[in-house]
Every structure is written in C-alpha cells, then in structure tokens.
Length: 213
Image (cartoon, rainbow, N blue to C red; front, side, top):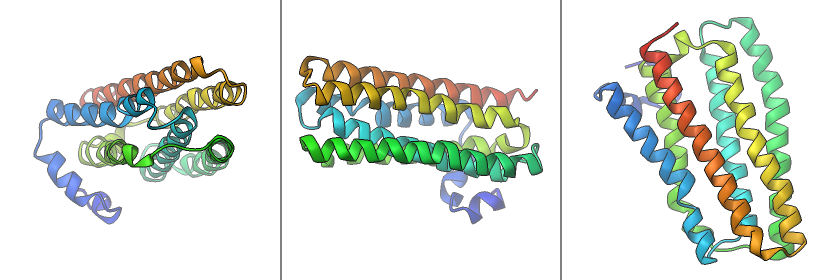
C-alpha cells in the first residue's frame, strides 16, 4: 500500500482499490460521480430543494475539488518547486472565488428560503467518496502522481469553476427576478455540465495512468 496515501488517510480506499483491476476501479469512480452529480436533479424537480440550494451544493462540490487539487499539487513528483508556487496561486485564486460563490448562494438562501438538505446527504457523501476514490486509486495506488504533468493537474480546477460561476450569476438573475420557469433549466444545465466535466476528467485520468506519455 502506498505509504503517502496511508498518511493522508486514504489507506482503506487504497487497499480496496489495489484489489480491483483498472476498469473495475474506473467503473466505481463513474458510479460515484453519477450519484453525486446527477441525483440532485430529482429533489430539484420535485421542489424539495430550490435552485439556491443547488448553487450552495455546487459550491461545496467546488471546494472539494480545490482540496483534491491542492493534494495533487503537493504530492506530485514531476513538477518540483513549481508545484508549490501553483498550489499557493490556485488556493488563493480558485479557493477564494469558490468561497465567494458559496457566500452568494447562502445569501440567496437567506433571501428566498432554502429546501430540505437532508435529501442531499446521499449525493454529498457520493461526491466526497468520488473525490477520495480518485486520489486513493488513480493518484496514489496506480501511480498517477508520478506521471501527471502540472497543467493536467491545474486545468481541471479551472474547468470546474466556469460552470459554477456562470450558474451562480444566472441563478441569481432567475431567482431574484422571479423567473420561476427557468429555475430547473439553470439547475439542469449546471448539473449536466459538472457531470460531463467530472466523467471526462476521470476517464482521461485513468488513460493517463494506463498509458503514461
């Protein structure tokens, strides 16, 4: 078992991942992503949660992405001292911007009311496990941290931020302008965009590990 993964608390997941072939491990990752990303559409369509709740949920998703990206930057082996510089830059830029979107989502909830977050517990847990599994399996157990290039670690974080920012701006316009007919559309576009990004990055990550360049 990778000792660094154990130190960071990914020992159990790493031990499980090492017992699975790469395709099976990727299937686990895909299922977790689908559950964590797509299922929030169900309570949104039923009115159990509102668009403002989904925006806050996406801010938490982005915060998890920031955390996993920083772990990758600080544990990758090919970037050297440049990784530390970019870790600081990334933490300040994307970290602060994700905090701003989260605060704005909370403001929207305080102005318009929130829904039942208990319905998001399962999806939130799946999202957390998806991030942990990606680190424990592809990054540590299968040696992703030894083959990844700096831009391959940084780019996903910026890609993830764009739909969250756009949805937060459009969501505020829709919610405060009382364009109720468009709330589900904005939420669906956000969820689909995040799902496509995460699925694409997961597949590319496994390909990079299996066929390092």
